[in-house]
Every structure is written in structure tokens, then in C-alpha cells.
Image (cartoon, rainbow, N blue to C red; front, side, top):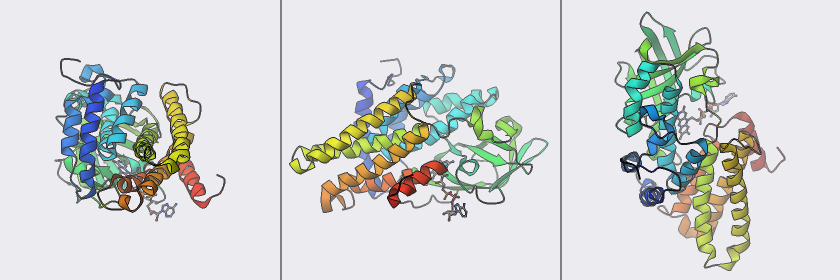
Length: 360
Ligand SMILES: Cc1cc2nc3c(=O)[nH]c(=O)nc-3n(C[C@H](O)[C@H](O)[C@H](O)COP(=O)(O)OP(=O)(O)OC[C@H]3O[C@@H](n4cnc5c(N)ncnc54)[C@H](O)[C@@H]3O)c2cc1C
């Protein structure tokens, strides 16, 4: 144990204790849409936010493989809390990867300790509103920095954020990534959307009405396809698959517990266990640089497993599982999220083909 009592590795028993605590809190989300402040604060105290950041800013800089193993445990315990952490981490990583030393120094230490919260609004540069002729969030160069006008359609936890890491497009098609302090004039955060699941993540749009952002907050660009390099990197990575597999693990743990009492579940749960083990092995191999399949193939398999395993858990729980407050019903709704979260076209096509019962 280190001086801060932080969790030091995914095998640390303190991580299992943390997971137990946040798992107990998870059922509250069934009736409440409140921000998971307590869960996040437990994670902050346990040093979870430091896993992802370099030592020089107080981070523990866990390896990709350890981060995946940590996320697998957290997401099996509470998907909402873990999802919020991924969006927080998305913002922190983009700040850490930027060449803007002043912003890094100003923001990262407090983000690492959990004192402040930042989140990310970049989907309109990757998977949202791409079919529209005009960008939904425009940036214009000014003498002092950039003027932002428009909206970012999806930002998780914006209501709780001190700053946002935002993508925006200039008239010539080049793009920027920039940190926007939430208290700048012109930034407005409407009430979060009511979602099918994960409503406590407080996700919704953020509006920018002629917001003047100082040059000192620029993280990357202006450049074409800012998401493809440096600070933009790491979209389409392993996070989404990891969380889908984490949620599948929760559902299959439930199925296995039921199997102890009911022989009729034996064949199905054994079959699922084999599939879970195989996809988890491939995920861990990919996270240690020894991929046996592409990230996209992993995502397709993880999506399929999470939808089927959560519905299998509900089937085993029968009508009892369909009553509000039972975890299996919540897991089914949460699993639907993987059909829409950061889903590139090939993954979306594969999901549709599976649903239609045809070969991809
Ligand atoms: C709960 C949740 C949390 C999220 N959190 C974040 C976050 O923190 N940060 C972030 O950056 N992103 C976030 N996202 C965004 C996410 O990663 C995807 O970008 C988003 O789900 C894409 O959905 P969309 O409706 O915006 O897609 P769009 O492609 O914009 O589709 C919108 C609508 O446009 C129509 N349409 C779509 N394609 C076409 C077409 N080719 N031609 C004509 N019409 C079309 C359809 O009617 C569709 O319903 C979040 C999403 C959700 C649901």
C-alpha cells in the first residue's frame, strides 16, 4: 500500500472492496437519476483517477493491460460509475497527450486527485451528426484564441464538470480540440436527457453561444481529422469492449449463482462461461499488444455477448427480474447502450446483421 492508500494494481484486494461498495450503491440508479457523486468520490479516494495519468502529474500510469483489468472489475460492479470514469479519463488523456505544457500543469494534478472534474464532447467529430452538411459546433480564429458557436450533442457529466474537452470545426474543414472552462460566458448546460439506461451519467447536449476561448486552452489543431493523431488518439480503442465484457461478467455471475440451485441452467451457463473466457482472453491479449483479432472484431463479439448474456440473466430471473429494482432488468437496459455508444459503421452493420439473423 502506498502513502495515499491508493489501489496499486488490479490484483489489489482493495479494488475488490471498492467494487463491492459501488456495486451495492448501483441499484439506486433504478429509481434515481442522481449523479453518482458518492461512487466517484470513493473511486477518487482509492486513486482510480490516477491509473490513467503520468507520474509527473501525480498519476500511477498503469499499463494498458492493467487498466483493462481494472475497468473489467469496476464495470461488473457499476456500469454507470465506470462509464463516467471513461469520459473523465477521455478528457484527462487528451490534455495529457497535448503539447500544451501550461494547460497540463494547470489542470492535471487536480484532475488526477479527483479535486476537479473534466469530461469530453467529441462525438460530433467521429460518430454523431456526421451526415449533416454543416458542423454542429463551429470554431472561428480570433486575435486571442477561438470563438465557439453551436452545440456538442453528447457530453456525459457536463453538469458536474469544471471544464470540457471539446472538438470543433473551422470553416475550412480543419478541426481543433480545446479545453473550455464551464464558467465561460456563453456556455450553457441544459438538463441532462432522460435515457433508456445510465440516466445517472447526466448525459446531454451543451450549447456554446459565441464562446470566446483563450488560445492557452488549445490542445490540438487546427488540422484536418484532429481525432486521428496525438491528442485525438484512442477512439475506437478497447474501452467500450472492456465495459461490455464487464457488464456481461455481472450478468453471468448472476446466471451461475442461479445454476447452483437449478440444473436446467447448466448447459447454457457453461456455454456462456466459455464464450466469456475466450473473449476476455482476447481482450487481455490485445491490451498487452498481442492481439489475435482487430479491435473492431472484439467490439462486435463484446456487443453480441453483452446483449445475449444480460437477457439470459433476465430470462433466468423470470418475472421477478422484470420488476423495477432487480439488477437483471437494469443490466438489459444498460446493455442496449453498447448498440449506440461510439459505434463505428462496421460494428453497427454487424449488430444489425445479427439482429436480422443474417451473415455479416
Ligand atoms: C448515454 C450516452 C452517453 C454519451 N456520452 C458521450 C460523451 O461523454 N462524449 C461524447 O463525445 N459522446 C458521447 N456519446 C455519443 C456517442 O458516442 C455516439 O456518438 C452517439 O450515440 C451517436 O448517436 P447520434 O444519435 O448522435 O447519431 P447520428 O448519426 O447523429 O444520428 C442522429 C439521427 O440522425 C439520423 N441519421 C443518422 N444517420 C443518418 C444518415 N446517414 N442519413 C440521414 N439521417 C441519418 C437518424 O434519424 C438518427 O436518429 C454518448 C451517447 C450516449 C447515448
